[in-house]
Image (cartoon, rainbow, N blue to C red; front, side, top):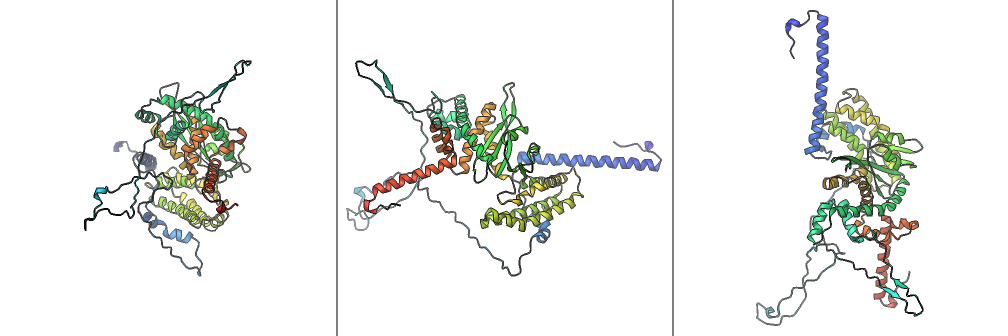
Length: 530
């Protein structure tokens, strides 16, 4: 709005005051415009752009080669630079797995055509064959188990005619229609392959069988309760870990009081290498009582984002906070449009930290050796990066994207540096984010959970299936065996059904069977006893 010249004051001091007020208003408006522009760019990127926080490596060199060269430890004069030459791996066709069954399809030359094309002689002799492999697929099929229970009666004339009936093994769902294989298939299809129940209903219909999605949903509720004791044991093992990774993601849940959905939460907790389990926990809200109830009694490192709900649990003699460099880096990537030079410089500093981790992986260092390497290389880099952040923080606006990124990093500086203390710690919480990816993909397909009870059942099945995937175990084979056995399995030996122990028992059993088959086929005098 323009001010008429006639209304302007004649006093010079008053004019200066008016100019200062206008400049201040302009500065506030410009700050608000930049903030809204930044939010709009992030929303557009989230909606249409790529999710990966990637920056062109060539851009990093434009800003930080000199700084990183000064920060990096100088090599010894006597050390010779090693040049590693890598060969490109070929892209030829990989051989088909040996464990797949082979069906021999023979193609023979008809006897009437066995004539030499040169001399015309008949009766050509068979000299061998050529073989080639072709991969084929046979659709899955449904079949019915007809349980026949034989009955016996006493034939003694003086007896009252007692009848004995063979016992039927316990079923996953008492008096239910589905067998353990069908239940495992539906569970893995939904929670492992992101196939919602309505699509599975259509697949079953193509096989000539109508299984409504409501029926399948009831099955998943039942097997969720069936697997709950096993997941409870997995939780106990995870709480015995030295390090736990955790994160959470929202899940839409159908609200019984309205036609809309409410927001539930699925949390993931990942144990260390000694307790290799991924446990999911459902809560109806995002309140801090969710992780507080799950982590009762835990003492060790907790690697998570900067969610305030964790703050009350951190204590010197209890849970120790470990922050995530991936979260810190993401904020600098988001600030690139408003402050490209500082953004790229910060990203390059963080990249130099991860180069130390890459070196450790290439050398296959033990945790103790990794800790020594971090103290030698990562710690000096972090000290200089922290000094650069404190210096540059004085030059940016606190509410700007770059100012908020720097404030986030410096406020969590101690927790971000804690991974230097122990080689078993990671610099980031990417393990938990990867474990939540299956839920992010799944909710795009099944859209929402039917109830809080359905969310808890999903947490149980996700725990079993994703733990199997992380241990390279076939989740279908595992769940089929577990659903068939767990009802009659003694609770005192429940640990035998944990995914890692189950897989070890399966390998041992297969080895014993293979040795027995070999012993039966080999002559007695060739058998060597251990």
